[in-house]
Image 1: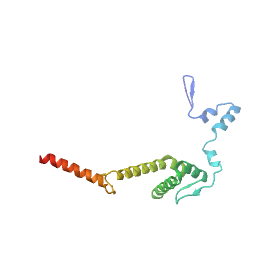
Image 2: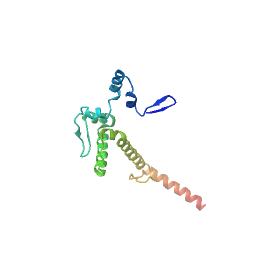
Image 3: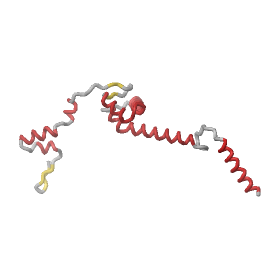
Image 4: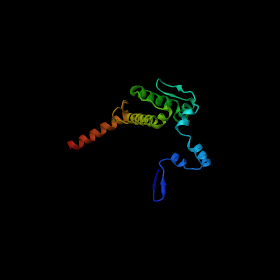
Length: 153
């Protein structure tokens, strides 16, 4: 606590609460007291193992299913499982980890796959495995003939 020009500056709410009257302190403590100690005392639901290194509750899994669908959730779990397995990293909540960065990585993968798929459909693009249609072959030959005739004349 610092005092400057008649004002009192507190470092935290708990420090300020110590100076409240008893009845206000209890009221304040009930609201502010739900800190880290209370989180650990909360009854946690059993977690289900969805991959070697990924666990979450069935409610969390259902929320992801509603947001991403079955294929999306499977891929996100796979991404996180691979990362945790290769790095040894541990998270407090795999569900929150999936929501924070794994979904972004999954959506980037989908966007890259989609752009690669559209690139394959364009004639002359890299990675195009489709045979050109006879009409486009004829059009290309006509262009070549016109260009040759311009240079030869």
